[in-house]
Image 1 (cartoon, rainbow, N blue to C red):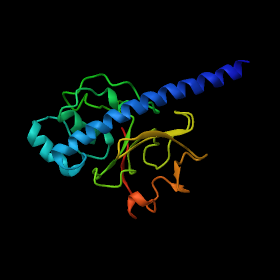
Image 2: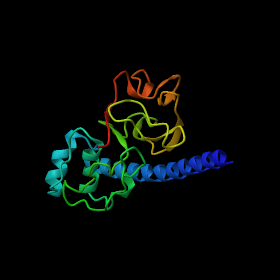
Image 3: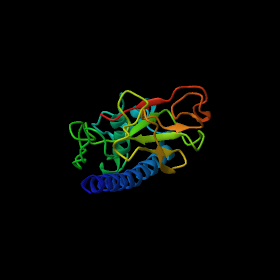
Image 4: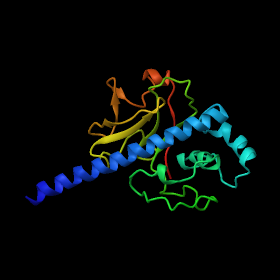
Length: 195
C-alpha cells in the first residue's frame, strides 16, 4: 500500500510541476515575442549591445547560459523572474531581485534551456525553450516531470513530450535536436543551458 501511495504522489507532484512549467514557459514565450517586436529577433549575442545601449542596464546580457540571454528580457521590461522557474536538479525559486548581476537570474533561478539565434520567421514548430535538460547534453532528466520534457515552440505552443529510456525527446523517429529534423535545416541548434 505504501509503495502505491508513494507512486501516486510522485505522479501527482510531477503533473503539478509540469503544469507550472508549462504556464511559466508560455509567459517566457510571450516575453520573447514582445522582445522580437522591438529588436527584430529573440535575445542573442547580436541583441545584447543594443539592449544595453537602450536600457543602460548594468546586467551582463550575453554569454554561454540561458540565464544571461533571458536577462535581456528583464532589462527590456519583464517585471519578474518567476516565469523562468522550472523544477530541475539544483533549481531554487527566484528571489525576485534583479537589479544587478549578483541577483538577476542567478545560478539556480532559471530552469529553462534556450535555443539562441532564432526568430518567429523560423518554422513555427521549432523548439525554442525547454526543460528539464541535463546541462551540456541534448538529454532531459526523466525524473522531474514524470518522463516528459516541457517544450515551447516558436508558435508559443507548449506541451509535454515523452522521453525515451535515455532521456531523449523523440520526434519523427529522431532526437529532437538532431540536425536532420526539418526545423533545424541541417544545422545543430545553438543550445544554451541554465546555470
